[in-house]
Length: 213
Image 1 (tube, helix red, strand yellow):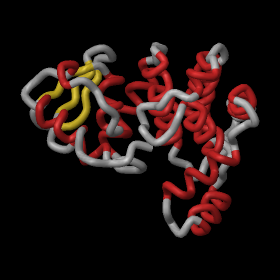
Image 2 (cartoon, one colour):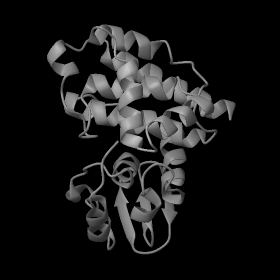
Image 3 (cartoon, rainbow, N blue to C red):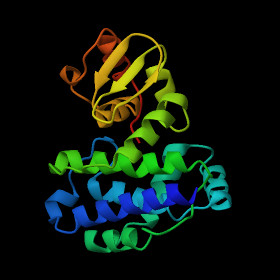
Image 4 (cartoon, helix red, strand yellow):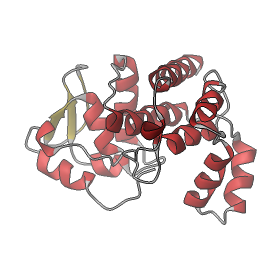
C-alpha cells in the first residue's frame, strides 16, 4: 500500500510540474473528460486528494447520490482565485494520503487518466513508469470501480507489447499500454492505434455512450 502511495505522489508531482508554465488560455482548454476545463480537472484532482471516506459520504448524500453534482461541488471548492492558485492547491496535496476508499489502484488511475485528459489537448507527453501502466492494466481490466472498464475489456485479450504485459482472455487487441488503459476508461483513442482480431470490437465498446469524468 505504501508503494502505491509513492506512485500516486510521483504522478501528482509530475503533473504539477507539467502545468507550471501554462498561460490563461491553456488553463481554459477543454479536457478529454469533456465535462471540465484544464483548471477544473486539476481542482477535481485536488478535491479527490482532500476528501476522506466520511467527507465523501456526507458529500454524496448531500448531493442526493448524484455523482456529477457531488464532483462539481467539490471541485468548485478547490478552484483558486486564479489558475496559479488552483495549481498551488493541487501542489499542496501531492503527498496527501487521504482518499475516499482504500482502493489505491483507483486513485493512481485517477491521476493518470485525468493527467492524460489534461496533457493531450495541451500537447504534453508523460513517459509513465512500466509499473504504473501494468498496475492500471490489471486494475481496469478486472474492475468496474468508477468506469465500466472491465465491461469494455470483457472477452478480449489486451496485449501491451511496450510493457510486455497482457490481460484478459479472448481475441487479441494490441496497442500501447496507455492507449489500452485510456480506451478502457472511455477516452477517445484513434482506432488505428489498435491491431488484432479483437480491435474493432474493442474500439466500438470505447465509443459506447458514457459521461467521461
